[in-house]
Image (cartoon, helix red, strand yellow):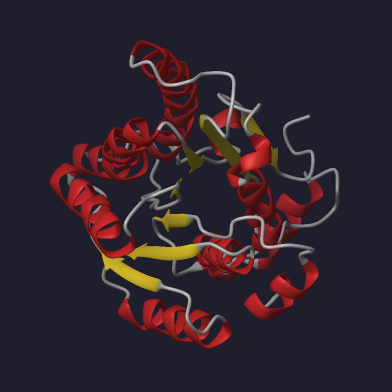
Length: 274
């Protein structure tokens, strides 16, 4: 895996210097890769997590050592709770003074066929993956609207586009992020114009989503080899993706120079949806 120091060395300039980024679920898997990339690109980082304290503390130690003097913070919160979402955003703004970039990455799976899926299975996945992303965005947008600038990037999934057996709840939650992203993107522009903020100049306020395909993370390590071989065979690029490849797209969308991109869904899936 690319380290934070290596990512910084490969970058020609700190494109996110002076920015504050909050990444939910930002201490493990794809979220950790996003956190490391944004920090490598110069951002102050606020990494969200829930219950898994050990990887959170390791990320904090790694990034603090890699970027001495840079403010790196951890924020524990339950994304499935609207009040907790608002609290986390307030805490980040209180500690960092501002919030420029929100990455909605936190997500869970509870896989069962429709016949076996309980009401709680359905509601829990929707509450974390979709409702939580909305409540985080709602709290962040209030602050970003006042400043007239910001970036909101949600991490969806190719499953939201294709569906999958045993994942009706997960697919619905990830597909829901598409409509949420486009609606928030339109509403942000509308509200900025209505409030007299300049639209069409500056860095803007954009809302986008990224849809990873099958990414080689710890979660995939539990899948039997036969199943992995079958999945790999479905991918035109012939391999699973790396979390850093998703992080690279998130960092691109977070850049001020990406201000002409909003309401878009960016696929990072090796051509799986072709």
